[in-house]
Image 1 (cartoon, helix red, strand yellow):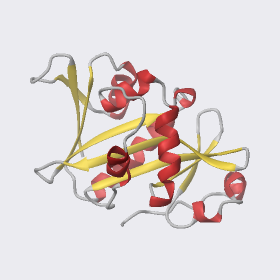
Image 2 (image 1 turned 135 degrees about the horizontal axis):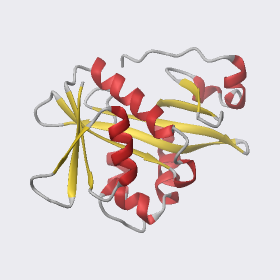
Image 3 (image 1 turned 30 degrees about the vertical axis):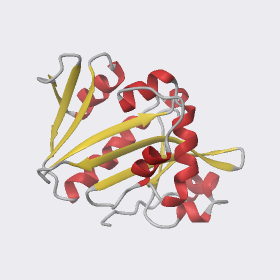
Image 4 (image 1 turned 90 degrees about the horizontal axis):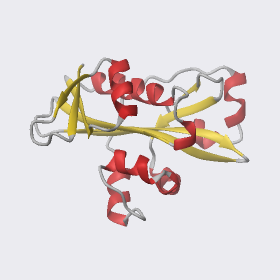
Length: 193
């Protein structure tokens, strides 16, 4: 894993100091637009229950946009796929907050290498109540930077045409948008890395 650890100020790290395991390894503590400190770090196997709770807590609309479909419960197979990261071809960063004595996942960004090895497909999901605070931008910037360092040349995201949040985020981050030639209800966002 070739991450760059960001040194956080003691004040920013204070809410997370009761969770030394969360602060071990590479991580960043960054403020959202409203000043709320958020811990961003690579997804770990120990985050399995947090990831499950995060997905189950998403609205139907958010799940539909993220997974291009909706479901009542995450299957064990689907959760295993989401937890499968190798820090090269498959990568994920999670955002955590201190919430009444526990760490709670409020967002995730991830990529998966495609067959041509120089391109990766990405996704980002932010909990409904944490949207519009800059978290998607933070998560995607870490993901984009990491993908570049891993040698990927292009990042894509395939999304529903009606997903305005992703449209705005992708535009802000410099992605180019085109209608999916295979499905006019979908768009492909592309970023040259």
